[in-house]
Structures are given as structure tokens and as C-alpha cells.
Image (tube, rainbow, N blue to C red; front, top):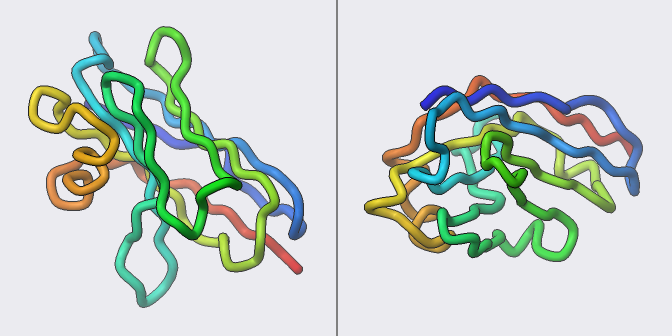
Length: 128
């Protein structure tokens, strides 16, 4: 599976951005997906995940402000980011794992970091 992120940019605190991740795969329903954030000198950390059956889960830092979703054809993954804070800044990556092994969002979130296929990332900068 090939993943390409887009939609990053610079925004003021309190603003919104919507990230996209294009999925190059004949049958994207074979995968569960997630978004991760990376900042300098820290490990890549999970933000949110969506299972192949539609369940979602979020890390506490982003719960209630960010929403993960897919389009109807499941070829594009989204991350709607609202009420952005300067500490949300970083490089955002989408990732995919095989749904036959990790079907739900919670299962995927635990597996993506070790077993996921990754996109190249998109940068988000939130200024105060």
C-alpha cells in the first residue's frame, strides 16, 4: 500500500486544518489506518486510528478536537484538526496495517507503530 499525505500548513492557534492521505491500493478495506505526529527528538506518537470496520480511537491529547475519517470509497483518509494549539505542531504521518490481523481501531493503534506502512508526512505549524 502506498500512502501520500497532504493538507499541512501554517495556521494560528484556534484555527483548523484538514489533512488528507491518499491510499493507493485496489481494496483499501483490507487495511486499518492511523495518523501519527512527530516532533524533533521525540518518538513518533499516535494521534488517531480507524479500523477497517469503522471504529475510531484517539490519543488523549487530541480527543475531542481531532476527527479521523475515510471517504466512502476508502481511498482517502482524513484528519480534521480543530481548535489547534501550538503544541500540535509537527510532522503528521498516515500509516496502514493489514486489517486481517488488526481489524479494530484500538488494535490498529497498537500495531501501526511497529508494523505499519508509512507515508512521507506533511508539516503542521501552529503559531500562538
